[in-house]
Image 1 (cartoon, rainbow, N blue to C red):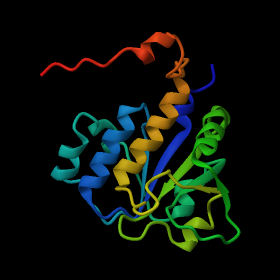
Image 2: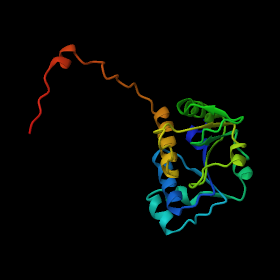
Image 3: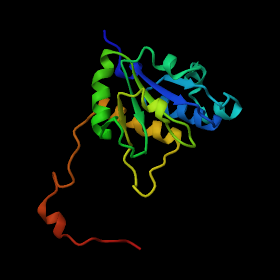
Image 4: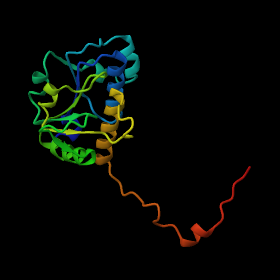
Length: 189
């Protein structure tokens, strides 16, 4: 039996600074069935604040691997996808977010894929981005694209979870009779 795609997705936090963010990331991962958390040169400690924010995801937090280099964290990954709000062009292969999630969901059945997230204060640096085969950006308000680390992981986990549990989605206009649009709206005060 092949492993679940969720088993082959590694969430990699590069130099996370806030213990609350690390705990919240573990919780976000567990919400959507992810469990492989990797911390590269963490500044944050796994302390009481991290454990409190992890809520019932202390198992994910407690199993988090600690690495002294990015190379050792990604060594067994088929490839790495970096998440960045930066619009730098460079030679990076950029993927639209939904396309990236679909690709990873399919590829993870064949081996480990790393999802790389940078420091809370400046994101991924050029050295880390150079290790990524692909980069993507979570769609946000273009006037304020900065997400909290755990929020970004939550969005990614949710996107993968939806792919795994796809159900037909009814369009707003399906199964609604034409006279529904004509009916006056009644509000009760």
